[in-house]
Image (cartoon, rainbow, N blue to C red):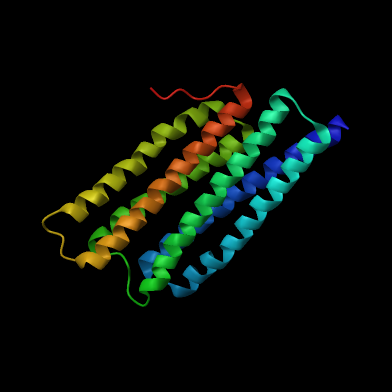
Amino acid sequence: MRDIFHDELEAINEDLLRMCGLVKEAMADATSALLNSDLQLAEKVIAADDAIDAIQHDLDNRSINLMARQQPVASDLRNLVSTLRISADLERMGDLAHHVAKTARMRFPNSAVPELLKPLFIDMDRTAAALVEKLSTVVQYKDTARALELDKDDDAMDDLHRKLIGALLSDDWSFGIETAIDMTLLGRYYERFGDHAVSVANRVYFTVTGEFISRD
């Protein structure tokens, strides 16, 4: 029975890893749709969000079922409880990519992002991809050392978000209120995407060590 239990835990972890891959792809595609006014790609991201949601619901059901059947304790219980939190964070990351894609669709055939700000969004996309790439390693190998690095890595996204806000508040802003609102929301989507990646890393660290990461 214990072998079956741990096989099921491993299968759950593999699905969490699959979610990491899906949210990374979703944000990359959403950014491409946003910057290139690609309606077809935006629609793809919006539709694909259902698959991410379905995995989360399945993981929640399986985790709760395992807790009911096996009554795990200690590290096994932490693992299952953390799965519920991790899958929720990853699902939210998918939602944020979905929001980016919806902005691209809403402004089609125009680009929602002024040419002046496109390099900034390219950097935000690269930062998001790097965060999820490292997060995938954290989830797959329960890598606590890299889990500790994610918060510092997310500083790059926060810096980019501050630069975007600075551009919106500049006296040189000439793109109007509607575009300013779009940029404010989009910046928040990317910033929150990074925050959720950090949250997943923190939860993996707790799963392994039984301790919360101290942020001084």
